[in-house]
Length: 190
View 1 (cartoon, rainbow, N blue to C red):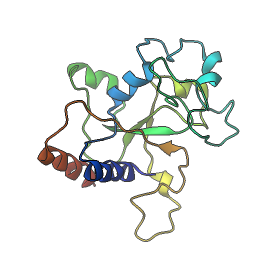
View 2 (cartoon, rainbow, N blue to C red):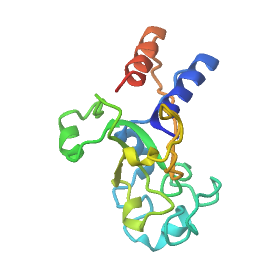
View 3 (cartoon, one colour):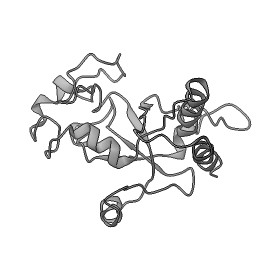
View 4 (tube, rainbow, N blue to C red):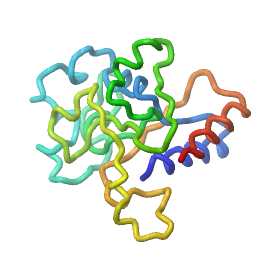
């Protein structure tokens, strides 16, 4: 699905439950994936263990799999690596790690356009290096090139069965006005 669809799901869930949910920022996603580790993977630097924790090119049979079939990370989070790459809230910037150094409290590169944005985690099609905790993927308009709808769908990426999403529930909930402003800003990007 598209990032737009994932954000609309979060908005729907907020309206349904009264609890604010959203996509994670890149920094939040990486923090959760690392689960306290400082190594390439949450279990260390050796990719030989990767098959125990995620689906990727070496073990996926070129398809995504049901969640929770592999081991979780140290914090009990499943499928952080591989299977499907996950949308984040950040605008994709090549120099992301340099840009966020100046904002250690809330490192978020707020999007100014729909593309490109960042995905994390790697996919079932990727080699092991693309599943490292710090690895990043840039969204690509080609993922919807074969969409038969006119106008093109905001909801699906016809050529991207390797994309998914994970949501977070912030501890500090925004006010209703802040939540509405958040969704309005992100969903109106061109």
